[in-house]
Image (cartoon, rainbow, N blue to C red; front, side, top):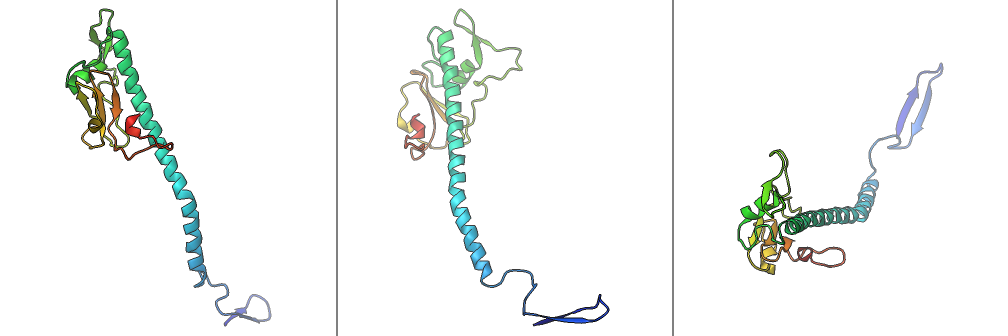
Length: 182
């Protein structure tokens, strides 16, 4: 029990309070209940946040793949149906070809005044591997070329023009499609 004295008025008032009344903090039973409630709220919202983050990463990957595939197709259309780095096992030749613009003869010339940056100069980062290196294969791509080994972010066939993200086969989208096969 607590006792308080009010000395502001002309007469002294004594008030008796039950033990702990007006004390700050949690009572022993309130703390476990508060922790339990926070756990329930976290269990409801954390999966949504993770799903949202994963969906963002997947969209980002697909945008980057489509961007590079578009550049490859543009090169093919403006270079007499030739592919960037055609038939070679050279990432440098592939990147050099992607960073050039076409002229009517099918030859390449550097873009702009050297201040322009095209996709070929710097391939985008694969959002899963955080790598931008590309493995160039002068043959058809096989699953082990883009199996998520972590050494490169992308795989490209200089014979077929196929371009894929280098990802683990375990990474799937919401419908269950393997992301490295898209």
